[in-house]
Image 1 (cartoon, rainbow, N blue to C red):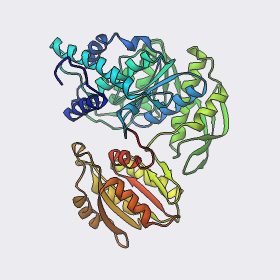
Image 2 (spheres, helix red, strand yellow):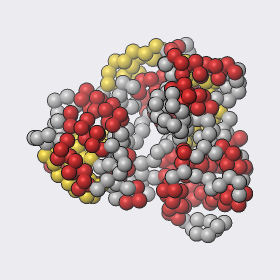
Image 3 (cartoon, helix red, strand yellow):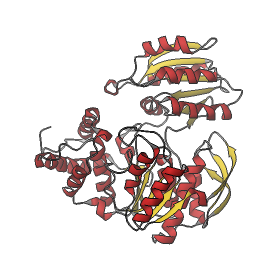
Image 4 (cartoon, rainbow, N blue to C red):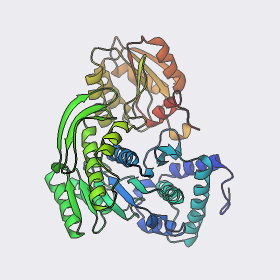
Length: 449
């Protein structure tokens, strides 16, 4: 495809986006000026949207999903921009929890490509990166499809992120931790300051930060910009149950009281993300004109929320769990939940990793589950740099102790199917190690073109 030539079809557009991803300027290049110029070439769709902007070291995806679910339950047409995607790039641009059509995505991608070429031609900004291009597509589609509100998840950080061109009604900062060190800062306060960059003047800020010094960064920024600040401390929480498919909790805020609430995500940590979404929905109803948000909508939104690939149970007999944990910390959190939910049951693992990840440390942690079987595999897209399954098997022989039975199947979907055939109906299969592996395995149950 030459400069200024439209993509010939949807797959051509996806291939171009894939090349941008492999170029990897990504979050290491924080060029807000470039993004503003790119969007100017697209008619500034960011200025035509009502936006809730969500950032945080962890939980931002879950919070965005829960809030989107509440808004849908209230009867609003909701655009949701999230990352990463598992099976289709269109996962990042959803309207009322559904993908736009390939034709709609292609039209937006062609519009973004023209703006991309104009930005390069300008000369001083350089080429828009992967995240900027995808954000441009989402914002353009949301305006084109006339959403009532857009919930936008930050890619990384806040200030300088490709999404930080929006003028949000509510900014949510879920928490702060040591992530993207160097790029975002070297202390929690520095990272909090970058995340505070999404706060816009005279708007609402919802913060779940609990550490004293980083919390003060948000308080100071909100005060400087004359914002109304709401903190997670204003909510009361009582966990009731953690089940494989959902959690049950009591949540009470100034404007909402819910007992024995069913929240359609599992893991005790999800209740904190639910609180962030509830507080934001309260603020939208009281301060931003979203009068259709009521207690019934909040309850329904909490109950019906789902996120693909995050402790997602896709099969009942045997139980198959897909989880996109792809680093040691995520694996540690994940197996705590596995132990709690599947105590006394045989655990079997299908594992695949990306090159460069600390897969041996993940194996050491996974070994504490004392798995009955471990099968090593690879995801098929070689451009995403899967770890060679033979190398993974070699490491597994060191880190998984007997009586774990080790095997290998180079095809991810065949590996999962083979494991299902081998185990009994009352056993558990966990597919984890990489979001790319989870995305590929997920096609067995839900094929996405």
